[in-house]
Image (cartoon, rainbow, N blue to C red):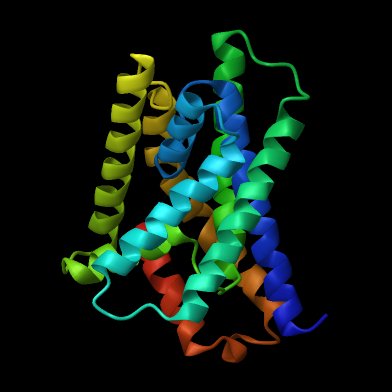
Length: 236
């Protein structure tokens, strides 16, 4: 298996784990992570599947990039992000169907168990996805655009993006469901613990993943290093 095939494999595994983790958080019914809150809110209020609303929400993130980015977003980058979006949307529907085979937790202990399982699976997915060194998903790419456009540190841009996403999700749920719906204690716990968990995972497992993808550390391109370092700074 060559370098590109390994990176693609790691990337797809990362996206699948991300979607699986989000699906566990949906089944926990305690609130989803900030990144998924808008898509889940649209799903709750529209009746569309979470896969379709994930695609729609990410298309909005791509459009936001186009509006905010000082640099012109090329057609190739636009198409690549769309492909990623549709793949992740497909994974969302598939993994939610898989998780729904399991008994739905009806006790608080069961709900929190599903929630914490989701936090670790999402963290593992992020680790694989970032370590692949391939294009970022629209939400993460938008965070970089916000950081550059408003001259903010990446961490602050991430917090700002998450807060805006959660606020929009909350407004949608309040207007159409008269409840917070997608937002809950799970949203707060995800916002706090995913970064902490990933921060512990990265120093231990990322070198192993990169050594598998690349023949040696010298084979890692400058672009890949630049893409990984800000992420490591985000998750101390």
